[in-house]
Length: 152
Image (cartoon, rainbow, N blue to C red; front, side):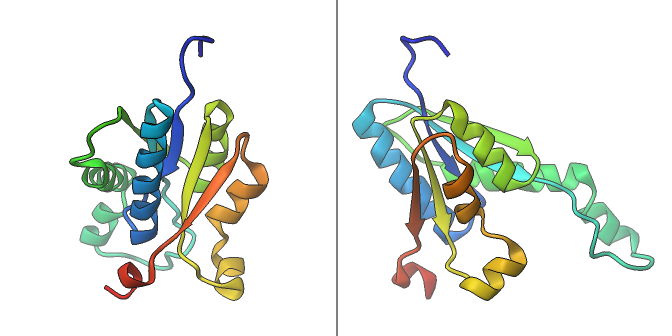
């Protein structure tokens, strides 16, 4: 990145209400800063929970190509209609925690949503927001989903 080019605001997008709230926050912040937004969606095939033979329809839905296409659709729907700032759509194969931490190295700010799973479920699933707070290469904003949005 050249010194004349401003660093983007990076935001993790997975289509969840929390990530959409983070995207809105990132767009508003980028507009104030006068920089672009990089909307990042990570996907990866994890076959660790599949046991035994599966029907062909199920296998087709979990193929790497199908998973990539589904993630691309989520990314496109999430950023649809955003105006006022340049939004770069970035689709990356990998674990969201690692992908966002890497993307943060060249960012002005990293914005992620928090689903608020709590300690137990967060420990089991792993918290993307917690990982980013501890491993990002720039400041991190964690946007909590509004209660009204959560109840929908």
